[in-house]
Image: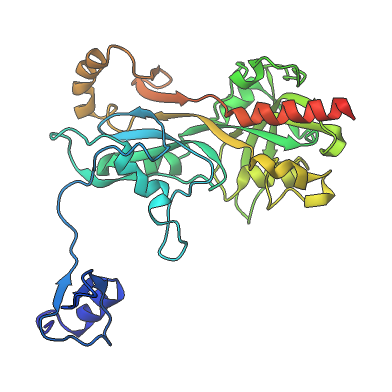
Length: 366
């Protein structure tokens, strides 16, 4: 049957699940994966799976809880929920529950005249399974290359909020200007979570001109994080009797960088981090795991992968008119040629403030 494919190609098709068999039997009407040891009987059907050409954008499926924060024909920014893995493999058991598999169902198909559209939207970077927040997705091949280069050259500015167990140990103190010189999104603004009304949590936001610097290598690689305290609350389960909300600005993107920097350098692991929270050795960290990992990517700022190209600039005026100024664009005039930036920001999940409220109330009743 497969004599024109060759033995090597035949084995590869079997190994990758490309061969299907349907038995000519009333008991077996479904297609099953074929293996080299399977016998083929008269009137059995054999099929070879092939990838169809064209784009894969099925109708929107509301069962996927992946809010789209920003989207155009070239890339998108989505809000990944905690507990969802970004990429899956053949053996991890996540399958269609991975974010990559959900993207075609929640994003819009690019217009027909868009060049080099990817068959499926492709995440450009990763977030840990337990981390929630903003994730950047490419919809065209040029956008994928451009965004990948921006991450490689550390042009993408990312902001995280975390609730940590204890009072963080102060590192090198730097000014706002020094923080900006590191090309992180350091501002004098206070994250919106600090302004939420609550009976719990003292507003301990540091001076808007003061930041802390962690320059501590991980696995032999340079790892830099800029951070500051937002506010804190009392907790009977936390070390030092306090939980602290912090604003984190990573310059680099090493494996578990923020989680390890807070646990190892600041000696205050992120609440709910079952890898680095120390268990019973950091207060009662086990009692603080009830809401999962309290780490959220709440803001990203990056160069638009298409509208900064010559062809993109020609379409820009029409796009701005069509969207009626609702696109989160920012013009950067640092260089001689203005650069168009996209900035997206989301509200911090309610579980952060809920945890602080519960711990403050429990502390007050003891």
